[in-house]
Image (cartoon, rainbow, N blue to C red; front, side):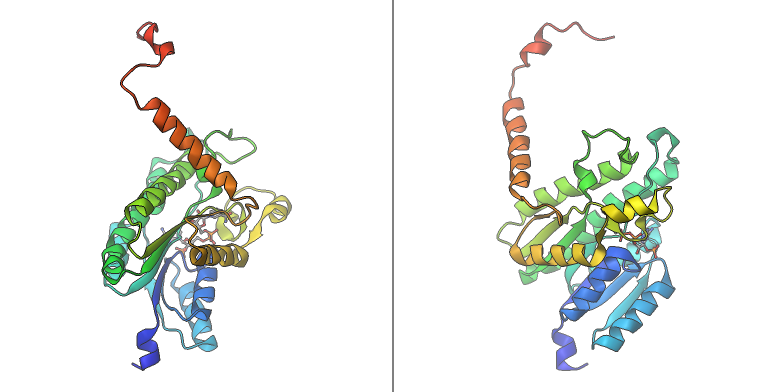
Length: 275
Ligand SMILES: NC(=O)c1ccc[n+]([C@@H]2O[C@H](COP(=O)([O-])OP(=O)(O)OC[C@H]3O[C@@H](n4cnc5c(N)ncnc54)[C@H](OP(=O)(O)O)[C@@H]3O)[C@@H](O)[C@H]2O)c1
């Protein structure tokens, strides 16, 4: 192994076979990272790895795994925990948009595994090594839909489990960032709006309308990596005024501070017990 190869940092990207994940891979290869590319479609991963090798001296490891299956998840967890991952990108995902009562329970379970369980366990595997080195970063790819709880389903998609899972990533990442303050490890939650990827391929959506709303994956990834350099915990690529995120945090803290007390709120004191 050459000296150059030994000193390159390694990034592990889940969902690297298309869309945002493939775009992260291309951008990080340009920035001098070696890569661990994770997804189910081997042909896509191998073709991406070959393209990257042709363009630079990047080393791309292809790790074919279905992350909703225990064996696939365990294999990626083991790789994330080997000690060399400098940047972990928890990106793999799918929408499963459907009215909740029509959502196949197994698909609901897959959504929770892929968007909640897998990022949590991969972060848990990679983080101790980053903390020991006092360097490294984790990017969790959520969605603006993490903030969509007060917005009705129509014309937005039916999304209770998807949006709920992405909201988990929001609170998980923010809370963990507080724990890791001054540790040398950076965290980011990426909250894109609509992005032009294969994500929508299985959905019954007007392609023209979608194209007019969608940001390009390369732009989202450029924003995410710029935000990481800038030390921004939350990255909303299309948001012109980031002070709105401060306002959101202030509103959450105000509700917590006002509501966390031993007395019942006045409107509940006289309420009749419900049956
Ligand atoms: N596109 C949007 O409008 C949008 C907006 C906000 C957030 N996001 C989020 O962005 C992330 C990336 O999505 P994308 O837009 O780039 O969509 P995409 O092009 O469909 O990519 C999804 C990636 O996830 C992988 N994946 C899906 N299920 C998997 C499984 N069971 N095991 C392993 N890998 C799996 C897919 O690879 P294989 O099929 O090869 O396994 C693919 O590489 C997702 O977390 C999504 O929720 C997307």
